[in-house]
Length: 312
Image (tube, rainbow, N blue to C red; front, side):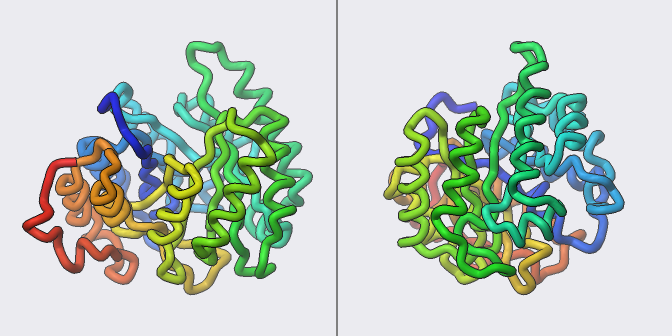
């Protein structure tokens, strides 16, 4: 991986991008997608979720996917989402580099998503922290605590700063290695992004890295990323071709488009270490298996202006 990146991007298309689909994407296609993403230079790939196949059939092949992704060790970081201790234990057995545990700031969304209260889910995170710490230091994964609905909820509406800080401070006290603030349903706006990020940073200090996980439901995804940059965020999640959505946010659009985000960042003079043209080629892998309405992206519609083509 390049030695210097001004901005770190995790490609979450293989997980958050594919989980919304009602058709199973063949394992070999997922592997090809991951290979292409790594070849383009993404420093982290979230490859799937350790959840029961009866709940999310898309990840019935998660063990095979992780095993394949691990062939790229040294070139990228392999992460996976886990909503509970059982999922985390399976992720640890599979040998992922990052365990991504999720709790919603909104009680209503947390109940809909994992059928637990926020307090119960925090107890689950404590158990996951203990399980991670039991792994030998040389194999111990990074533990990321994600806060879903940090900027609004399709069920409860507005989410207060207090609700977000409750989870953030608990994550910090329990021992999260990193915290992700997620605009799960895409209701965030630039002023809100700045306010919540700044409040969390004041509350937990500078020791724990923060990242933003943004969706583009209201068309403000890139504006929200720019707002995050203004308050010090240098770590983002995004999905190729804008894949994704939330099962509990009808009509919600997918994640911010990785290709568009990289173009914006590079034009701002920020190095991503990612080959944009190689990443654009991932669309061809998706088209035969993903309905057209799930595939978005301004660069894919307009093309990269010839006068602006350059290596990342």
